[in-house]
Image (cartoon, rainbow, N blue to C red):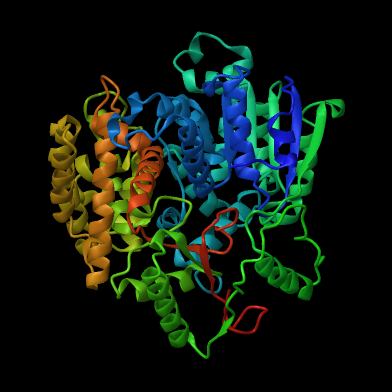
Length: 614
């Protein structure tokens, strides 16, 4: 690719330690490719080694995009390496793998796990579990959703109202090492700051030390989307280094998380003002004039500068106007989507080149179900890998976490008063048919009174001393009876073959009578089977890079999210010769991504007042 003048200026800009380079880049201006050429220039010129460069973004999708294009860029000159696991021996792949590319939360997670051990980052399903510990009397009107409960929890945390409830949940989260995303960021910041006074107690934290002391250049993609909670961590990482930030304040989408203007101002002030240089990319490679004109028309209609998308460089007219289709109802809309996919596919367009965007996840789920009925493969672009978000898979991972922690208790490695597994046990029990919310509340309260772990409560305290109803008591006892032999024998900890590992896990899960393993349709069953295949692929990758002296069980639990990203990057390269899958995303989550053919699905309840596709 031939760089434009403004891109070359950024790529060739002189390196200066302890300074900030700010790149203002509008939509489609080639921001990401400029950043990557900048990385290659820094490495090729010897200014920085690959492992001295850290690239941060807010989403896994953006990280995927950066990793894919980094490998492509380095391959252009050196040829295409194998995509098999043995590719780690390829010099290009080895160089790219040494460059630190993380989501900000992914980086924080690595730092905290290295310093504190395995923990659980609470998401929507986790809040649902915690809600079951709250008496129905607490809800004045109607029971909130999981997201509403999370907001209520944060609201009550610093309020005298509901103190007992919050204290109970907070204690469970603390002892179970369950953290919110904000708490994760705070803890990572504290660990980085603690390295300012390094002592023997901080040995064995190589990753944290590398980020703090060895990284020379920090690059932040989409700086306009940063929010206040992230500031302490970013300051700790960037201070005293070369900081390069790329983005456009006009594209900010996270204002609801806090005053991002103040964050941008604070980022600008990490280094002295005479060490801050601002450059601009004013090109538009993404959109044809036809698309730009339509976008300007819509933007202008809602009160924004209609010249916003006017740029220096623009594509030549394509002669193809964007399609604007008005439909009468959802069925007509869905039928059109199928017709369009078939038309594009018959015109040699890969499925992976097609993206369908909607405002809500509910709308995406409806579209996904409809498309899947035609046998068309899809993938949803979300914060976490799709297979991990499947409730049935989460149930399997809960089993693994329980076995990992309780086996260590059984072997005397950690105390029985250690309640790290409590959250996962509650999560698992809540998925078992016949165990009610009231029983979970009573069981949890009793283990608090006895100052023992929930595992100790259900395996060592006689069920006659539990104050739960007989039906729940029977179910809980059955769960303990099924899991206890696995914990005592440590069978899963000794299995090193991925397929045997997964077969043993599934056989164990099948005995537990979980509602998560009861499927109401063939579609649900097929989805679970596909997710199990992804599970197996990640296990195989874990086996491939398993450190000496670490079990497959522990390594999987520590790294499965990171391994999923690696697997996705390899799969995307292998899919280049295949049809791939239709990409589904909310409009919010698709920001910064590019696809050759995009369908933007409107909604009768939004301000367009019509079902519209672009």
